[in-house]
Image (cartoon, rainbow, N blue to C red; front, top):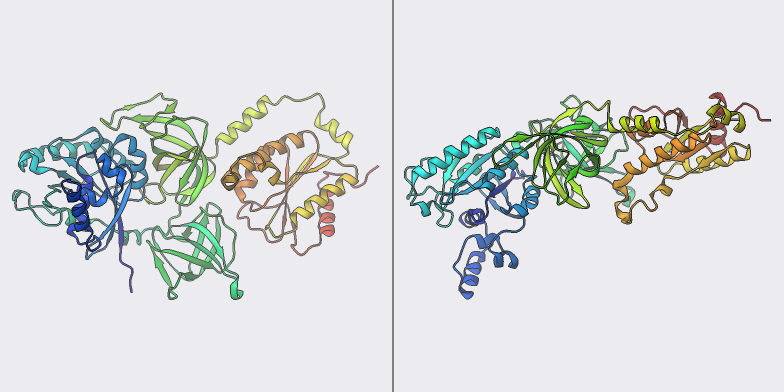
Amino acid sequence: MDKREQMSIVVLGHVDHGKSTVIGRLLADTGSLPQGKLEQIKAFCERNARPFEYAFVLDALKDEQAQGITIDTARCFFKTTLRDYIIIDAPGHMEFLKNMITGAARAEAALLVIDAHEGIAENSRKHGYLASLLGINQFVVLVNKMDLISYDRGIFEEIRETYTSFLARLNIHPQGFVPICAREGENIVRRSERMPWYEGPCVLDYIDSFTGSGEKEDKPFRFPLQDVYRFTEEKDDRRIFAGTVESGRIRVGEEVIFLPSQKKSKIKSIEGFNALPRQEIAAGYATGFTLEEEIYVRPGEIMCKVGESLCHVSSRLRANIFWMGRAPMIKGKKYKLKLTTHRAFVQLVEILKVTDAADLSHYGGKQQLDRYEVAECILETTKPIAFDCITESEATGRFVIVDHYEISGGGIIMEALDDRETSLHEHIRRREFSWEKGSVSPADRERRYHHRAKFIVFTGSPESKKREIAKHLEKTLFEENYLAYYLGVESLKIGLEADVSDLQEHREEHIRRLGELARIITDSGMIFITAVDDVDDYDLEILKKLNAPQEILVVNIGKSDLASFRPDFHIEETADVKGAVKAVLSLLRREAIIPDYTI
């Protein structure tokens, strides 16, 4: 049986303009409420001497009914003969805009409600801008409460003309404007007899006219990796790469590439719980894959199809941001960026221009983003990430920014920028320029210690013997009177964060600290040794840059899972510890790090 198409629609609008009533009517008039639910709500209103309102269908929480406003993003479901819908009710108050952004982040289309009697409010403009900011280009405006203006066509046309002009400046071209009275159900699921002058589609017709996931299937394949699962029961050795297909389609046997790691393999099988085997899968499905060639990739990478247009990979990007944090967004501070399943550290590099969402005026010269400001900015992540521009893919072109465990900003990516010159390069230039050298030169240390300084990094799978080999190397060098020191990366984690569960997200910080520490230890003339799990090309490049001007030596144990970075030396995973250490010592002698003989 084929899966029914599903679409998410966000309902926007100023407070009290009737969003919840519109949604309540859609649910009731399409027969999507549980049996007896509407009667239950009407009975509740009667017992409490309250007039029945369709908004109560959605505002089910007691505190929402007490305040008479929607205070959080709510989701509900209804269906037509065409598809299933998820309706997201976004709050209208300014203080609830964060919830609105969170709810709208996955929407494919938007309905914006304007009160015909009150007219276009400031939030009507702000929400229109936010829809454009999130890349929502399927847009219908509902002019509600037409009964309060006696169904006056002139007022409706005036609102349409004014708001159409405003949306055009946002490059939003709405599919249409619908005069409605949500309370009475006028023009919601059927045409109204009270407004014979309106000859366009009703709300439900417009909703069914929105382009759904079928179009997504024709776009390049995008599969953000959520996690990798391994099953061990009954000798099941599959490694299943799980996630949701955001766009495109793929078949068994086709070649794929993971970005940003650039590791390639082929689809071996398409997996699903309690599902029959299938040869192809497309956008909208949560699924899993097994690969012909087992590779190590981290959650957050995006799997693409070789031969199609691929994601951008960069650490610098131009983006439009809406800032909602209580504290301003400031340059140089590290925040957490969440894009699909990926998590990364990000910082604000430059504010290009700030836009007033009410009148769309621009101004520059700001050094920080204040609450509720919208700006075009340059952002930089600590490592390259995979993404699309919003014009290429909505799902992989939107992001949120977290500050102190709270979602404080949201936005869309407009352009991938050249990242050959990053904040890391600038940091290293400043560090080296300000580096205060002692009176002992590197050559003096080499003569005294009888060896050169070196940063030796052991890589390999977590199951390899790289730590044993690294520690035995330290001991052997020490016994031969060389200055050597081993440090495990785990030692850097202690005290980094009180919340141990959050350590994985701070991996980038661990790598940075390791690189900075290596710069100091190698400057002292010592041989600094470490072993790193799950290292990727970008980790090693960062360590190499941070350790400069000293050199790095990478020794890989077992099969290398690196895509472009070439380790200096390979050791078979089956090698014994003493034999491996002996091989590394021979390499150090060939590289003149330690002499061929000692006195």
